[in-house]
Image 1 (cartoon, rainbow, N blue to C red):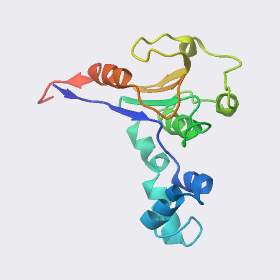
Image 2 (cartoon, rainbow, N blue to C red):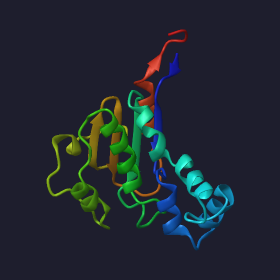
Image 3 (cartoon, rainbow, N blue to C red):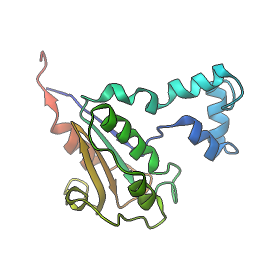
Image 4 (tube, helix red, strand yellow):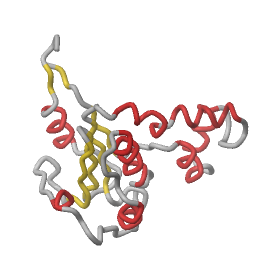
Length: 172
């Protein structure tokens, strides 16, 4: 069989916002080289940032089993704030008329020691494939988002467990 799903870890979803955070770093320099300048330099440059940003296209992934994961400390000890993962999930949820993650929950989790004041039952799940505490876990159709104890990292066992649950036979 072949995998019929995708798994994204600590991803950047909004390149304009990413550039704003990293304009003075090598990340900013690389983005300006790829997009032809900084956001606001011209409509053509702004279009490059939009078209290269996953937030622009994720509404088309509403039927894709997509697992989005990020460590709670990323953005504090790592380079990609977790709101990028949460915003990506919200685009998919809203496109599928599913509940999204509230701005309040996003703010609570984005603090350095972020925790939800009112976690849902799914946020308290134990997932042996992660082997870490989970602070947020939500589903929207076949898409899932998980914020776990960790930083800017991928957990291979969780990636493989997700992909193994979404296999289809060749020719289907």
